[in-house]
Length: 451
Ligand code: ADP
Image 1: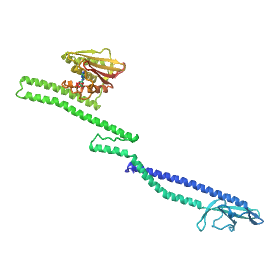
Image 2: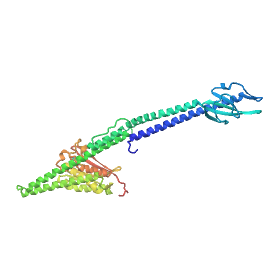
Image 3: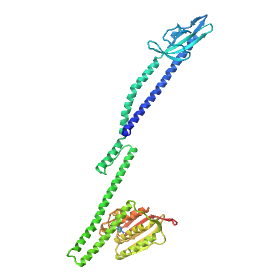
Image 4: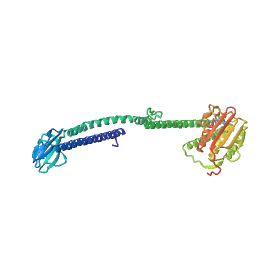
């Protein structure tokens, strides 16, 4: 049974159930018809016996019968002496007398009857037997009809139920077949673009198919992201590696002077440093994606983090003639991993230095707002174009002017991931020509909250 398909099993049980119900219904019908027949026989025999008892009398040892008992409707009447000799009526069958029981009896010709015997007593004569009997044809017909019906109809019903059940099951399971075929074709052809696309009734199978399609959407999306990530990462690494190779080849060639060699080494050092940052960021991103990063959560004053970041970028900002202001007074408590959050804020501050206006101003601040604790980095640089703004948090996205700034478009993705891991988010606001503002929004820790 376990080897059969669900369709076959459903059909089997369905047919069995229909056959069982049909049998039960036929049984119940037969039983109630039989009861009705029995009642009819009993009433007819008892009623006729009553009539006959009133019409038979014994007068001076002579039997007197008031009317022709053979004329009574449907029931035949006979009278016998106590020893069994026929006095009145017709002899039809041998059956010992027994009082007050309705019994079946058969004639030699095969005709069947139901019999009721009654003993009549008289004060001055011998008892006699009054026998009333009625043809059992109707009951026999009923039995015959029921048997024929059962024998002929039941197999037909089973066949109809089986075929019908199979078609219903096949129709009901068509979506399942479709789901299985789609899954198989995806496995065979590795084509993640295929979908089940079930239309029609919004039933359980529709939901399964929908879940399956949604899962395929996400799978396809995530495979595509993975593929793009790998190709973007290789591309970003290939450029500095090619430059390093070219510089090294040049430094090793005969035409390079001592000064050229030093300059080539410096360039190699710079590009290797950028590669190291890129590899570090790639590693951090993949680890965080895989959920392998453990956060060392503690209650931190975000003002401290803001000060550290401001201090760290002061030198590079000064190199571009920029001033850095740290606007953080009073504790702004948040539960966070200090190293990670500092790294995130530093990414924003470094961007402000890289993309801010030469000779401009950078403001790094920490403050609480309602239930949130916020870290803010503002610059008065050229800002971000409105059509670029929605993309800046995408991996490897770089603005046109930023291609030569040494980054690879991973800084903001990391900031966003770190904020998410802390149960927060990062927002960007920018007005071209006026400046940009980045805000890390975190849940605020209560005063008494401990790590
Ligand atoms: P990267 O700095 O390595 O290019 P990021 O992910 O840090 O990558 O930033 C993505 C892009 O967002 C940058 O290439 C730049 O175009 C834009 N951007 C980020 N910060 C600023 C800023 N403070 N001002 C203007 N543009 C910015």
